[in-house]
Image (cartoon, rainbow, N blue to C red):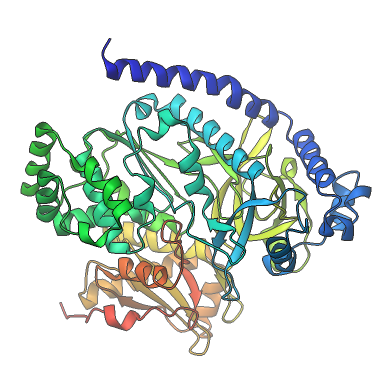
Length: 560
């Protein structure tokens, strides 16, 4: 038995162990969701009853969910910020009895960053959830774990607060602490994830990924990242191949000494792989499968606005490559484990987080009726509220999820959109999900496909304006797109149709963009502090809420 066979046998043995230690307890929990959630809630409250927040909200007297809902109001980050900052600055147990080990930093609605406390327990939970997810994927695509993994996440530590406490990303920390056998299969060393320069980082990522002939899995939160990988290869293939052949990087002087030491030894490439790479020079637009022929799985976000880029990604993949939902997750918590890669649905992480839900219409109309996990109805769309080990209590995520199917006795959920992805100019109340569905249906009817679009509601002019990377700049084709999108919006939102036909809304406007607009849009916000790996486009916004200079990327229409 050769070394590769031995390693694969060790992987199978490890996965069988995870089946007993992680998957079976997860299944047991999902067979009794109400009991699992009640035990978790009471345990979290008991552990934190002597914190400042716990004393103020009488945690010690809470005997069940009804008491909890009556004692603790819905929280936002801004209502919890004083407790988080007090605990971070003084060490006082303001939210949690245990001190945070790390803070996950994410952008805040006020412009001031949010710092999400992550305890040692939280990070251990993340590791357990990742192990459970790995086993689920192994059952579907076992060959994935016989190859290399191109995982692209945010760095574990991005900086330190004045008190010396580190801040970064939970996904980056999990990347660091996975078992050694798993880390040996990573394509990227941790040092690459910390490269600040966006273009430089992707040049290095592509160079290292090209050197590996046996990448079986690509894991990244946003599917637009895969489009970026293909774009970088298409634009710089000759430079990249020269670098790989020489075992160096033409941009190596822009890396830190630690980054160079981690990257350059990994650029070595076999003669067989070099021949494969040279053959790519003869392909005008190579696909992902041309570049990585042994690829079996792409795991990424598939819901919400990420579906815009995902459709273009799927065209680059052969049918043999499975696309699996990465799971409902945010900086605040990991919300699901994907249990069905066909429907892309996930079972909520009921062993680690306590969930509450309110139907979308009830919340939007100011009459919230809170529901626990077992009361979700198939097809219902809900705002989600979460209580975590990190001290978020009844925390309003401003996310809308859909209940879809069950895993044993636990309703599954799928991310639909951010709650902010809804606009209302004159009573039509248009949702981001309706816009995404309408544009996609219109594109399919016209046989074209975009990779980026954003719609804006201009209340002052009473009009919706769609900015889109549309492959046709001919005026007649753009008018066909406009009419098709408007027709699809009519079919999905009767109020929009009525407001349009009554003249209270003006006709939809289309603004075609250059092909580079989507990448430039993302770069614009990354440069302003948004986390690149987890960046999500809000596909429906109000005019004036976006600072990106769309005019620079406008395409002039031409006559037929």
